[in-house]
Length: 385
Image (cartoon, rainbow, N blue to C red; front, top):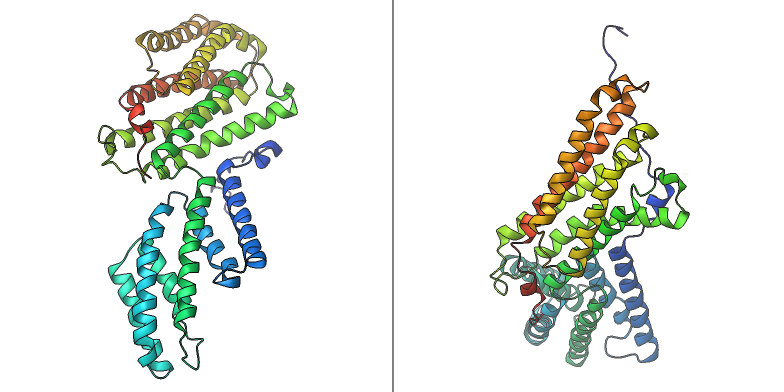
């Protein structure tokens, strides 16, 4: 190998701690409980009551519930009426009038292809899903003798509609069917996570001195800050803006972007606080940093208790003043820091820590400016799901 060719340096990847690996996803746990409890209940319905549909209760409802759990933003209330009319059309018209006139597997297969083509060409969203399930379960190629029983088909229609009603009721276990309520709930979780981390991170010089429970909480709330912006975005996309004209899609998009930037600033703040700091270097700015952290914690506590808590000019000026104070401290001790018998990496850690506080403050001010344009009470109003 030619030694003149520089070897590409590979940056060391920091493996996640045991606490970060065990941090649970609240929404995922709710989805698992939703699926498990629904499957168990459908099994009990089949065993103890044996309603129309019989053991198919154990098949259809959990299958649709899996789709709902994967996309909780799906409006399950919109399943009921389409299931009534689409499946009724399939049973009364297709199953009772057309299929008995067909002879042979070739004609039946061709007819099923035409039905699927019409469904995928003319329907979309939830009606398409219901029609596909209806055709796949009601019009199958397993009926070799091509015998048709209208009473059995009617029972299947009752079973299918009942299954969609049960899924709608159970979907409240995942979250509110009103997406704006789900957005508010997740933003409140975001504020709670930010407040907790601001109160715990950097309150002690060495995070390794914290207890096991505190370390687990820190890992959990860090995971919340990383994942909640994407969850908020997915739920906000399901909001019907016709009911909330005061919050435009552009304003919501700006809010989502600012939340994502704020999360990145938090992540940089956490990483810079975990770097080794020289005691003399850290003590030079510890008092100012503690005041700064306390101000950030207060801001998120106010946001958590009241969405309409606007970032007043006094608090905005206080954050800017902290930025200016730290810059003055660094400038006053610039020569002293340069003369200290410390490594360049320790100096870099100090400046990175100060920069993370500055970046977090700027991101918080930018987020507050966007959040003040959102009419939060408008989203709290009750509307039909």
